[in-house]
Length: 192
Image 1 (tube, rainbow, N blue to C red):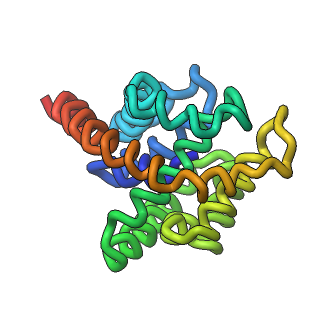
Image 2: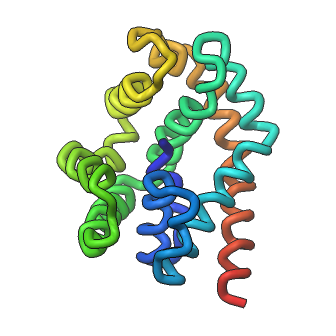
């Protein structure tokens, strides 16, 4: 769900590919990719594990959980992509977005059909760059609602996001530096 964060927290093109593949492959297939792409898959899993255990995430989930219960984490992820996008200078975010699309296109032969279809939409509507806009996050929230099996598609999740923006920003600001440090440690392990 948090495509910007996962792509931003990479050190190589291959890690970008692995970060995206993780949500589109079966667990047993994760070892069938080249080693450097496997690093991205491993990194994605480590980011998710670290994120799920962080106290700021537990607090942020409380904002959404009365409305969406177990899906709260997905909406926190989407919200945090908004704050990340707004913390990156405009030119750098634009360059990062273009790089991610280019890297994924350069590895199309490894991408499953559902990821390729999503990439078409992602690139056409420039999701990664437009996460910085309220309407971009509203679009992303709508996508999560449409994919969720047990949620009413008309829930006012975007309104919850708007009404709690300062609180969510606080949680992001106190979480993301910890995540960056964790990712740097993991990357150092890859290099050792």
